[in-house]
Image (cartoon, rainbow, N blue to C red; front, side, top):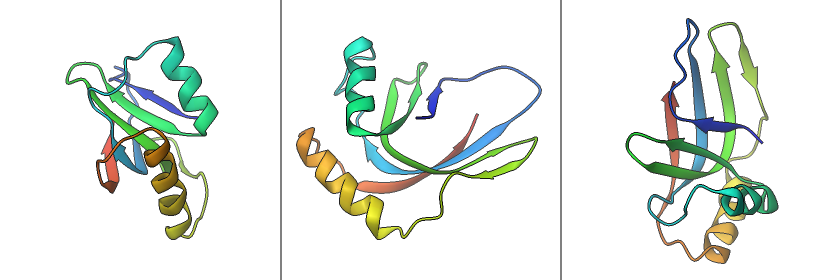
Length: 102
């Protein structure tokens, strides 16, 4: 599981692509949250300054040092799985493609 937690100040940059859903304001980021994420096999992106939280599956990650393909997947597979996870967690936000960098 890859965890993106806020901004890290250093000389390198990294980018990500995540298929997931917005869960801002739904969970408190504590030990129970980390256990829940692990149990459901989810990745997450959390921005401490804005409080924005996105849960899902990270499908690509790039660092200034190299390009890393975490997995090549049929986009329908994680969407179906994420729809189930979203229902189990009682979240109704839409599934989207999130692209960003830190």
